[in-house]
Length: 246
Image (cartoon, rainbow, N blue to C red):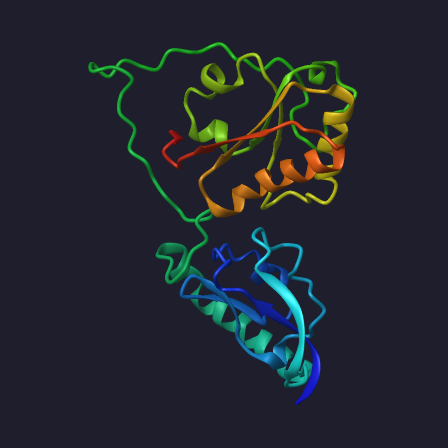
């Protein structure tokens, strides 16, 4: 035992999203009973690769008396994890067991016909007034951001929400992103540049109800701070059934 850096997880803050599990190359963190937990001190190198990925800031590095990091034991542990994954992969695909990240949980929804007689859905006009739409691709100098009502939208939202174009997109400028799968390293600064250059009159974040998706809200607040703006961030949450949540 020795005094060294080691991961500390605040279970009260942890929402069980599992992003830290993917970020930990040593497999020291696993989601157990819906919470991220350090499975063994000897698997944690204390470098903190998991810190930036936590959307709720539940992970810190502390200095305390802890067992030394054991690279050999860690490699054996990772091999065992790999064998177990290969052995149970087909079972998990058919019927997931234990905790499944809400953003990745497989679900099917029943949809009612558009009319009582089962009439087909009628085509609706697109309300998209710009291109590109991906936050990584848009330019802060784009004229459609100037004085606009700006929406930062999770890219799953339009798929879940059948009336997205008419209800939310109409008359808005848009940037889409995924806080879980995108490399979001420069997103806050890009959005801050849009706020500084375009001076939009409003900023609304539209995201799904899954925990990882709330990262867009934190990104928007970070951008407002970077831009030195007093713009208020409106937060709209969409349920997995495509409804606007109160």
